[in-house]
Length: 564
Image (cartoon, rainbow, N blue to C red; front, side):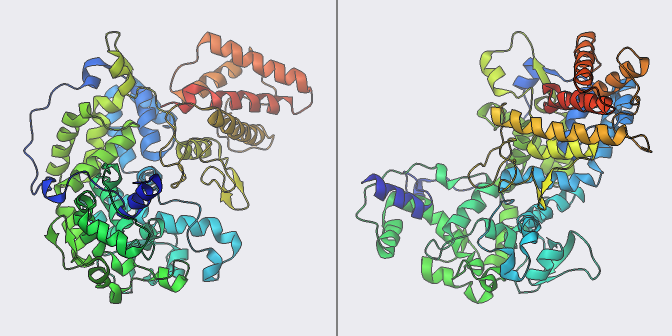
């Protein structure tokens, strides 16, 4: 087969297996029995972070902000209070926004372009950024609300409600609470069945299908996101005649054993998704509502009844409950949260740990906060360094130093300094049309689908500009003669100089607040020298402001700040 034909076959088949469907294992029908856990690599070779730095990691992961001075004091005086503080963080309302951002690293729905524009709905161009985020965050908001309310995780795919804000309530057939503001529990009114995120416009606007793909790409996305089984990772190896027309392609899908290996599961699943099948990908009427009248078209076009890996479905109405009952759904939830919090992929060596986590998750009735507590308490999460006898392969596998994500940098710096970087209504750290999300290591959901795990020059440059803006904003506000409240520079005034007790106290407070580590003499001398050099270079009445802006900028760019 020519390379062009092979590529075409791959795109249409979505993926193909080298084995026919009858040789594939059936999905498990019940939860496997729990096994006795064995010591993990992290437990054998890992050294955990000390209590203040571990609290810093947990606070950034759960809320996207640094711990408060009071929280750091409490955990320093009594490390056993860490569990109590963790519970406080898990009940903080900021948890919802943080997990919208975190889950997006997996679901990839916060993108910078959809097939429709805001003006297609009579909105202005100035509303483009909120329009895009309103659409893309709908499924993420459902999952995050389930998490903060600690409902069973199955609610994510079975709920009869959605999350909507003023924009989606205006453009979609949604019943939104009268007088409501922001994201609220709401209900579609177009007859779509219950199914949580599976029945949202936001998910399928991101994972759209072409008229001739017949929702196969959506079925593959569903399997990847909620079962952690990627059809595209299965091998393709077959010979075929020309695949240049729809009839030839459909014949190959039915008759080629390699294609049938995937499509025997993929096509019946796609057949259940035809309520979201659109004739025109650029028609707002088409894309806004669920089409109950098209649910049976899957049987016609795909020549197969809806089914879930061999289990017959009545249609979309059975999709959510059947998915939730599949043991792979719980396994995938555990794997997803583990990868997000460990900041690395799951490997074979992690399977015993995942099995233990899964058993605890199931025993807790799939309550997501129970799973988070198990993950946060585990050595894989808490590891901060390795013992001297750790093998090289273990050092390569475990993530001991973890970069803040672009979202964490944005929320942490805003919480610290009040500084936000915007342009023409766009959050510069949350888009790539005008901003620097990918440069900082974030995902755009389409071309960049995995966050940056290692330092890169682009991140250094973007962080430099972010730190300069934040440092300047803090220095100008905190050192203003009429300032009544201060954010970071609470110890000094414009007249404070290196060598003054308050100057030293300020540097010590900044080191503790930013890094959760005490200030050492060498670093103190470097920062004092920087302050002196900048002040001497300027010489104006604003020299203290400019000098402190430079010091803050350098401290924010310090690896100890951007590493968890």
